[in-house]
Image (cartoon, rainbow, N blue to C red; front, side):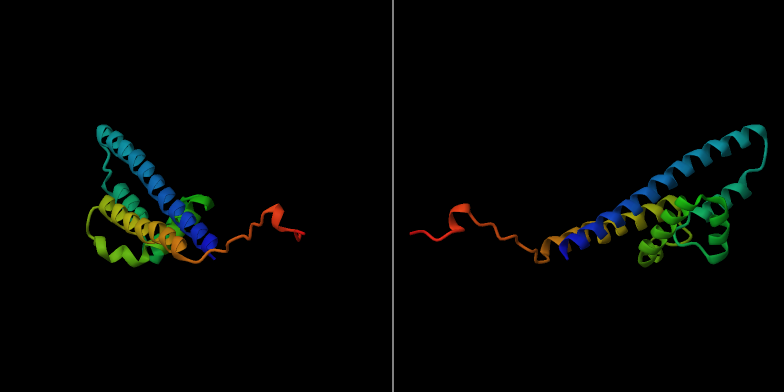
Length: 142
């Protein structure tokens, strides 16, 4: 049982970390594109607002459908896993705060609970101990 809990903790941590890394990469490329649009004189506020809506942890159902169309299936699995794991923490960061604060707070709390907490639980669970006998004890002496 401890091995299974440890595996779940590692998997949850991997999903949370991957989602945060992909979010950071999206934000950096979006920032670059926003700067390029600003230099060209285009209005970028509607595009930025839509991208921020897509990056919110646990978005509204209509935003989720848009996100599913724009992201690949692998990316969507990671995002959906992240949404499930951070659901208990989405109200803590506040929905009107900066997107980076929302993502960092929810990912940090998720990693603390599911990653570190899961590994601690696995360490406390009883583990099966293999019976090791010495070859000299196998037979009867005499």
